[in-house]
Length: 43
Image 1 (tube, one colour):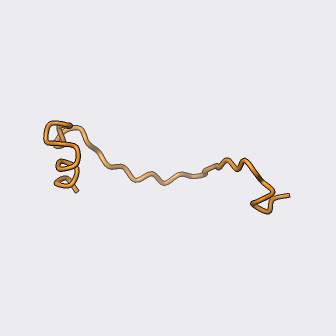
Image 2 (cartoon, helix red, strand yellow):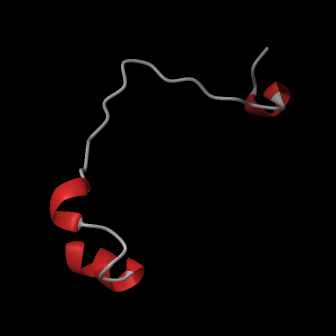
């Protein structure tokens, strides 16, 4: 992936060896917004 990001963003865009961190987020809960609840079959 590093080669892809360097090709896409350019060699000088980031200092990849020091600053980029990948983190897997495992939330305990999440929420959503539905502007039309009727279309979701709620209610």
